[in-house]
Length: 276
Image (cartoon, rainbow, N blue to C red; front, top):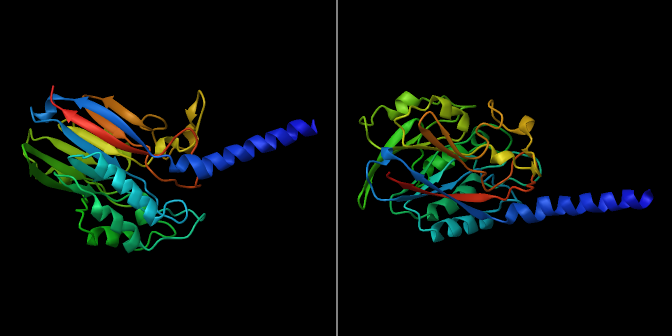
């Protein structure tokens, strides 16, 4: 029996090392193709999503964020969207100054621009102080219930961004108010729970926040009780279609709560949006 016990300890130790020191650094690229008549016959648009970076030393250092930025730029996207939670607020590390943590994002390069929204950790929690102001002071437009018209190389569409569901006051009507009826719209939000309120005129919604459960198990996937959503697994991950609407939820690149990932590698998302 003592050998069985020793074996189990060894197995759990190996899994712990893998989940903390290996998988969190195995960045992958997940691709989606979405065809919709809401894209109004425009050329294909390549959209990269980066979310839930959760900067904190040693798990998500400035140099690690630099590497993520390099990999995103190598994808040559037309548009890059940052979906919030730039800082980690868990106690398992040393906080990074906001100005240093934000600086790498300014090297992102996309011909149709880079846009951002804030997440819940940026607004509340130990270590979040200064991050909203750092994002607002950066060269990247921060959309807080706002929209921007994008025209570039044959494209004409709007990018909208909502405030965080938990600590701000997201206002979908305000965000969309300036957009003419029928124009293509990409809606950015940190928390996918807002998707139920998004009108069907929006071309595509994108979100993060859930980390796809962060720790997933064979056969059952994410544990529903730890998913930070009032809808359980409904919006936990991937491409969700409901009521003639499309949503992409990314698993994100960082960790929250505890610095572990298991069967759920960090990801950058690349979406090809095309017209039917």
